[in-house]
Structures are given as structure tokens and as C-alpha cells.
Image (cartoon, rainbow, N blue to C red; front, side):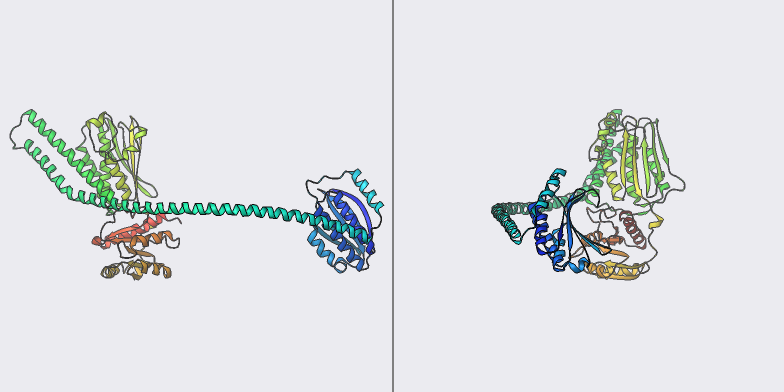
Length: 585
């Protein structure tokens, strides 16, 4: 033990009166060094029990009181020769373990020492050396205590303890009354909150009912819009094509001669008809993309043939000799599996925009690759787009007003349509521009990865479809793909299969009674143990409003009307590829 060490008094213990004296001295020492009342009683009780054990054992001992340690604590040290503490001490050792802050026993060369330590309160004042000297004198002058003295002292301690308990009991009663009052308030508040919550729940239920009604109305409106576009397409295109055809006949070979003014007016009619036809086509395509009816048909794309087709189509539309069209494709061309028609539409839109808004300089298309994507970059030296307009150009019908816009009117649908097609193909479209100098648009499409190629064979696959004839027809077509082909007639049966068996590939019908394919797919993607299973969604028609090749539900798509060995291979490859792209390893 380090730090301060002041011996206060040393007392012998050989007979019962010595025990009373040690108890009294211990209580007075404890009070003098700043221990609280309850701690004073604890110290006196331990000293009394240890002293009686020593006297009963016939041991002559010495006890000394010491202020020791840092911060100083009260230490009572009993020392004697002969039998050890485990033999001599009985009740005293148990009492010390319960009431003191430290009990330490040593035995060296037959000398036994029992150290009992009691910590002082940090707020207690430390007695000065003069105080300790007066305490020693006082204790030495007291003499031996009698049983009567000790009885009076214990009675006084008992009275003080009873008074303390009475005060605590009254305080406890007061606290109980306050707690009861608080409980009444809590109960009232709980009742009030419950009523408010019930009222809120009724409002939420009513709101959900209203939302469901609005959702049904929106769905009906969307279906009506889709039917409208389907029905109106022929009615719009037929008269417009007639107008354009008649205008061309009036100016074509063999037509009656026209005056210069008549030729100009017929040319205006032809231009207006062409613009109107372009607007109708873009509106129809945009409506199809929004409704989810544009479904990609992926196949191997010959990029060289695609860019040659674009070059030929665009050169006839370039009116300024000061603009050069440059198309660069590396040799050999990157491999790409995607919908070629959609790809051509995207690139034609981007290149047409660049040509339209470039007065001099260059419009350049470059194709390159990185680890995951094929990138098509269309860069021009045109008028550019202001920074605050660069996101707005992807909003439908939004157009940036400028001089060239007035001379080259458009619909404001080209870029939104191109971005939507890029997303349907599993890629993305980004734009950057410097106002007055240039614009660059980058189309990114996922490239085939040899590491994610369709496996030549899997251990097992599961076909989930309520159409038994189609299940067996598909099973015959995929028998070379898996050693074990299992069947499930509906979504719930499929979930039961997943609980006992984990297939390597799943063909899942989208529209089934009861638990449909969307719900099964959602369960698969939410369970960590099943989320990396490749899934091919099989459907009789294109699923509206659901991009199955994106990062949402992550699946390939196979239309029942287009099932063939080639479409099967492509759909399975896409299923494995999207899982590899989106599921963390």
C-alpha cells in the first residue's frame, strides 16, 4: 500500500472488555476521519465480530487503526501469533466481507495479520496532523469500556438508525404519493394518446382507401391511354402519309408544271407533314416506353454494320458543308448483345441532335469499352447547353430556346426517349456540355463478360408455371441445360420447393393465380440465401411498368411466343449476368 500512512492508536484484545473498547474506539476513529454514520456503524460491527472470534479462540491480538493509501482510507489491522485466520475467524470474516471495502489476510513466520479497509467519501475533509494528535490523546484517556457503556452506545446507534429509517420511510411515502399522482397523469395521457392514435388510424385507413381508389383510377387512365395510342396510331399516320405522298406527287416527275410560288407552298406542306409524322412517331414510341410495352429483343449486334447504316442515313440530312461527321469504331469491334433496333434509335437521336445544333466543326461518334460496358460517345462542337438546362433537356417536351432552335424545330422528346431506351437496355445516358462550345453525350450498355457466361450445364433448375403443357414443353427444351429439372404449378408450391431445395436456375411464369411470379421473385430477392439465384421470367406478353433487366427485381425475360434455343440461351445469359452485376459477393 503506497501513499500516506498515519497510525492513530494501537489496542490489545485479550478479553471481552477489550472487544467493547475496540468497538468504541473504532466508531470514534471512523467519525473523526470523516466516515458517514452508517459506515461508522459498519466499522464498529466488524471490529466487534472479529474481536469476539479472537477472544473465543483464546488468541491474544493487537489492533491498530491507520490512515493509509492515496486517497487515505481507514484501515484496522489485527495481528496475532498462532492459528491462522481460517481457523480463528468465524462470524467476523463473513461480516467483514459484507461490510468492508477490502479484506486482506497474510501469514508470515507464524504472525497473522488481518487488514480491514473502509473507503472515505471523496467529499470528506482530511483531518490535519493536530486533529489526529488530539484524537490519539482522547482515545488513550478514555480507558477500558464496560458492557454498560457499549450497550448505551449501541442503543444510541439503534435510535439514530430508527430515526433515519423513519425519515426514509416518510420520504418513500411522499415519493409513492408523487408516483401515484404521476401514474394518474400518465394513464390520462395514455388514454388521450390512444384516442388520438385511433382517430389517426381511422384517417390513415380512409387515406389508404382513397389512395387505392386513386390508384385504380390511374391504372384505368393508363390503360385507356395505352388503348388510345394503339387505336390512334393508324388513324394519325394514314392521313399524314397521304398528305406527304400527295405533296411529293405534285412536285415529282410527270406532274403538271407549278409556278415558283406554288412549288414553295407545296414544299411547305411536305415539310409540315414530315414534321408532323416525326412528332407522331416520337409520341407513340414514348408512350410505348412509358407503358412498358417496349421490350428489348437482345441479339448479337454487328457494330460495323450499325455505324455504316447511321453514316448513310445522316449524311443525307446534313445541310451545312462546314460540319464534318466522323464515326470511329475500333478494330475488331467490341462484342455487344442488345436490341439493335433500340440501339439505332438512340444513336440516331443523339447524332441528329448534334447535327441540328452544330453550325461548323465536327460531330463525332466513338465507340470504346471498359471492364463492364460498351460506351458510345457523341461529341459535337455546337452551340452547347446552359448549365441550368442540362437536366431539363431530359424532361419531355422541354426545349432550350436559341436561334438554331427556331430554324430547326423539334418535339422535345428525343433525349427523354433516348434515355428511356437506354434504361430499358440495362444501361444509362449522361450529358455534359459547355455553353457556346460543345456537347458530349455518353451511352453506356452492359457488355458480355466471359466470366459471367451462361454455364454449359447446371445441377438443377426449377420451372414454375400454372400451364402444365408449357412446363413440359420447356422442360424438353432445357433438358441439356440441367441434370435435374423440377416443376411447380404455382407460386406457393415454388416457395415450398425453395425451403427444401435450392435450384441453380429458375424459369418463373409472371402471371399465375394465387401467388403470382412478381411475388415469388420479391421473396427470392429479399432472402439472403436465395437472392443470387438467376431467374428467367416467362410471360405471354410484355410486363408493363417493370424493367426486369434493371437493378430492381433482377431477372431475364423470355416471351412464350418467342421461345427458341437462341432466345433461351440469351435469356439465361441475361439472368446470370444481371445477378452477377447486382448481387454483392
